[in-house]
Amino acid sequence: MRIQIFTFSALIASCLLGVQTNTAAQTYTQEPVTISSERVRAEDGKIYYCHKVLDHQTLYSVAKAYGVSIDDICKANPKEDLKTQGLKKDSIIYVPYVKEASGKNDIVKEEKAVADPPRKEETKTEPAPRQTVQTETKKAKKGEDYFIHVSRWYEDIDDIAYKYSIPVNVLMEYNGLTSHKLKNRQKIKVPVDCKTAVPRKDAQENIENVKQEEQKEESSQETVKEEEKESIDEPVGREDRKVSALLMLPLKATASEPNENSFDFYCGALLAVDRLKEQGVDIDLSVYDVSTSLPITAERLAASDLAIGPVSHTQLERVLELAPESTAIISPLDPRTADLAETHRNMFQAPATQREQYADLLDWIKSERKAADKVFVISEKGVAGTSGMQMMSELIESSGMNPSYYSYNILQGREAVNSLEGMMTKSGVNRVIINSESEAFVNDAVRNLATLVYRKNNVVLYSPSKIRSFDTIDAENLHNLNTRISTSYYVDYNSRETTDFLMKYRALYNAEPTQFAFQGYDLTYYFISQKAKFGRNWVKRIEICPAANMIQTDFRFRREDGNGFTNKAVRRIEYKPDYIVNIVD
Image (cartoon, rainbow, N blue to C red; front, side, top):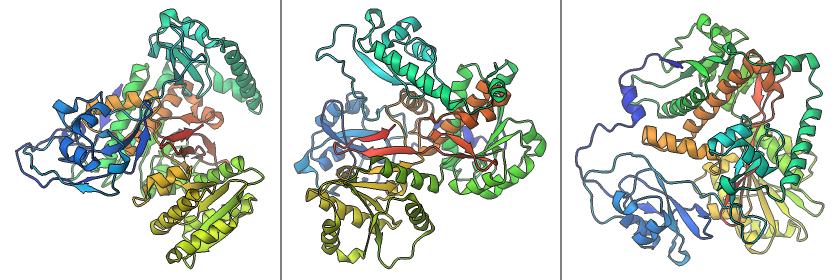
């Protein structure tokens, strides 16, 4: 593997490794502790707050704010040595939920100032614990305990056996498999003790399910021309496994304040490269800082298999003008660059567009709607619609759902609640869309809908992903409304791959990964592995590949009217009443 880095300074090393240059002792004003609105139910059945630690917060101040003891917090986080290590900035800890002590927006300040604030270090906090999968019998027999591994698009049974140090034949026999090939997101039971593992009673059922899925896949691929299929599936030679890639980001490496988001993306990309290197992929990666200029030539683009970036529409358009059609250009972050895919065949629009998310949300409603259900669209009276609202309205009109519309002014208060209740069905589910991008109105509408749930009305909210960025929304209301959200980004914390990524990222960079780090990893791993796996036919293969479920993003690229590619995959998440957020398959 060879990595070339252009226009970087010595500052980069300190930024990537999280080195602190100012460790002098100092006093400070204590950061207030605000009660978190996020709660989860752990595998022990108890409910916990998810509290993000801010700078200078201590066990004492957090415990006092939530009305629990320091020992309670330590017991809730057994994998953290909190009593000796203390709290670490940006880490996530669990705090026991005490209903009578959980005042909304309570703020408590630590009474003592502490010298020498903690530096940004590795955090060992795990995401929500993986729930234990029970066996069919009430009491599991010895050797029959197992956990579930959900296969990824690039994995076969050999990969999973290697990952968990289990003989391939034992894992296949335990799951009743007859083929090494797996389907995307196929659930594989991994025995805790492989030495005593025996085939389970449902092994034959598993075999039949695999056979049925194989038959479905074979029939779905019959539309591919035979000669093209032979070309796509032909063996990849050693030379084809070499990948030449470019990464172009506005790093601002020589500036006094480098671009943190771009560096996070770059750090995630490096972990993907490292993993691919372990798999034997030969990668020539060149990294360009394009914050002030675009130092790339047509010759360099022609010599590359793919380029991730730039981010901006203007620079991306310039690169597409320089690059030959044989070089894939990936737009990594901005959904507004999708129009470039309409005129450039080598363009890949990675983030799913707003239209794709809205269309998926309406498809979700139609798939769940029953005869007795009603669909409502709520909007703010007297407010001009944004482009996003107009897009939603157009998609609703063309969906054939014939919803009931209700518009009200935010000052109407209880009148709106009573009016909505009079329109709702009592025999079915009231499925609601709030067609507004105003945080104040959406917050008011969510509160009103939650009141209707309290009055025993069956209400389910379907929302665009923007609602997750509204700070004023009470997360408890989203759970009570069984909210469904179609989004481009959501981290699958139940994935073993996510856990591996978190541990490596924290160990290497002494920091928590942001959504940009996850995106850098997902994009880099997906595209380079596609080229390494399918060689010169990798672009043709992408055109027929099913959805690839990565850590944060799903990818399913399809050509737009014979031109470039757009991502059609949207991740669905569901807020459950037990304070769990699920990814819906």
